[in-house]
Image 1 (tube, rainbow, N blue to C red):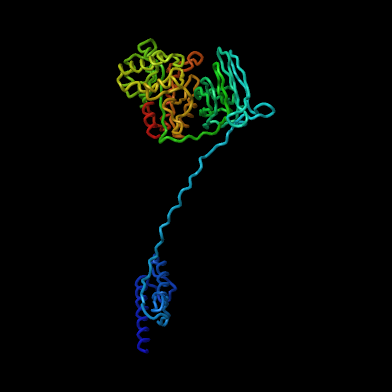
Image 2 (cartoon, one colour):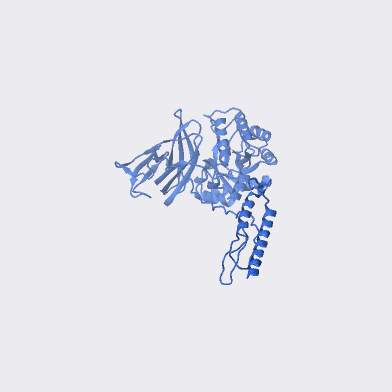
Length: 484
């Protein structure tokens, strides 16, 4: 028995010596344990080794599994199967990052006081009636509405000119910001959206936002606009301008923060084939290294005050896009199907015969006039359609067959163009500028759509200073389409 006990003590001592050796070789400490070695990176391992040296052996008895801890004098409570454990490494388990929680889209308050036009004292609070011109118009307050109890209706039974509309009372808005309008409507004829902006000096500015096509079911109409510098308030007209009936409900006006493109873009477009564009604009465009899109009226080529075929070829040779603007500059919505086809197909054939098959893939409608039937015919010939509807072209609201623009008029200031460019850069959107003639002198009362070379150069300088990319309409459409 003494021999057996002596043997057990010797085995335990051997185990402790082995643990001490492993611990000491792994993380040496001084005798007093008051100071650490110079290798500070082993601090955590030292602590683990100290702990492990106190629980270094485990034993299993023949009658059951029993954990056995060695004592300071080398004796054990176990009987056999002693195992030496090496000090464990101080490892941190990998941390799994939390799953991102989807954030709800940011919403902005509706600035319209009574958007569903509910009754207060028998009339819709916050709503006004308007109209002008020679027409017979009537207003009504219908039951039921699309939502709630009411909707707003206007009818015209005879029409010579002018329009009629319900509109919400103007609301104070912040200059330089984008705003988005929408409503739900039913109408038996096409109708128009028009932003009406009051300036600080009391003048009124109008911005065409788009066409709402006839619909027998409730359908949403939308448009966006930027409040110019010096503007103080705005409303939006949804106008009826022909014999028919229009119902509207659930109106909204909110701040607009569009989905950005991969980069901001600007396109410089010129309508009507005017010789002044060749004489005064082309040298400036070449000076800044910018390519434009020229919307050509083929019926006026080589006519007085219009470009010659050689002038148009010079634009093409220098990298500008040659696009179509019909043959005769007729409002396409007033023509029958065959006449529309002749204007669209005839202009494309003329341009591709003269300037190559890469010409005339883009189109702009005269006066910006279009309807569903005209758009369907445009799509048969062209890759895009540019209107004169106001706005920026954004990733979340891009339509290659209703490219929105900013119209440069004789009264447009360089500061306005600067603001449009700045907004496009800030929001990574596509700005399309529409020019007509570039005349040495301009009387807004006589030629309201022209600009001067001095003003055009100021616009180009603002674009250059911004660093924004200038591309043709065809290039922009291809780039944005690839992002959708």
